[in-house]
Amino acid sequence: MKRNDLILENIGLAETLKKNEVKKLNLSSGGNSIASGYSMAGQTKPLLLRNKTLEDVLKDYAIELQLSQFSRFENNNDENVLEWLLTGKTEKDMNHYAYIDDTWMPKSGEKITEREFGRYYPEGKKQERTMQDILREKGIDVSNIIIYNGATGSFLDNNTRGGILSHRLMHGIRKDCTSIESILKYIHILNRNYGTDTQVYLC
Image 1 (cartoon, rainbow, N blue to C red):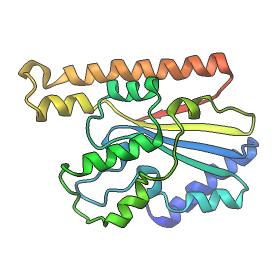
Image 2 (image 1 turned 135 degrees about the vertical axis):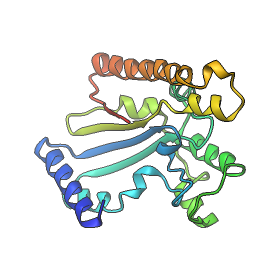
Image 3 (image 1 turned 120 degrees about the horizontal axis):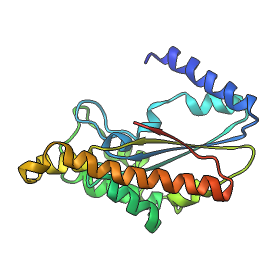
Image 4 (image 1 turned 90 degrees about the horizontal axis):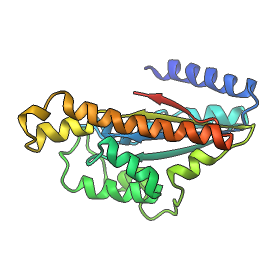
């Protein structure tokens, strides 16, 4: 998407949020390597940071933007994501995983400096929020949106790590979909019982 088109899309989002009296947008990316921003072709960079104009546009509409990421380059099947949710893994934990994964993952086509990597995945920064913290935040002026990329982790594990032949097609996808369903049910339970209103966009 061209920069000008993206700005117009961001303005459309800001106007919708403003119309609904939203003053804070919690925007989270969760799931697999796509959600983490890993790329074999371009530059590895967190998915949500690729939208370079969103924060400035929202600021013009007096809307606070809080970005979060609960995903990793590797070991990212949806059962693991469910575990991160239920065991309270923090944003700091996820950034630490990025450093672990980066030591042996194939490098992206476009080089990324250590300084850029440290800015994108700040391991030392105090980021103690968990997925549950974000999901439980509520208020008539707060909007929680999760962009979830999944259903690939187990499939790729089976096909790249010597999985048995009968598991190399749909088995991994079905396994991941079971965990995705559990994650969505958990979010729905929170919405229903705690008055939160988290929206999930499943990719």
